[in-house]
Length: 68
Image 1 (cartoon, rainbow, N blue to C red):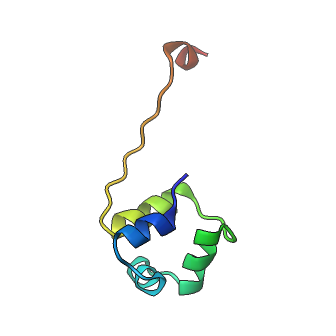
Image 2 (cartoon, rainbow, N blue to C red):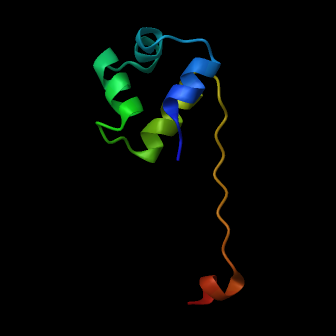
């Protein structure tokens, strides 16, 4: 699970700054960080990329899983 607060704080951003960069209301940032509002994985990745992170997703499957 992606912890937005952790990454926001690592970049030294306040919730207000993070909201402005991401183009969302400040209240949404608080609700996302407290788990009060759902957010898609795609949206989380977009937000992290806006504050300078490069996000990669690795999918591990066995050959057997792929054949089913």
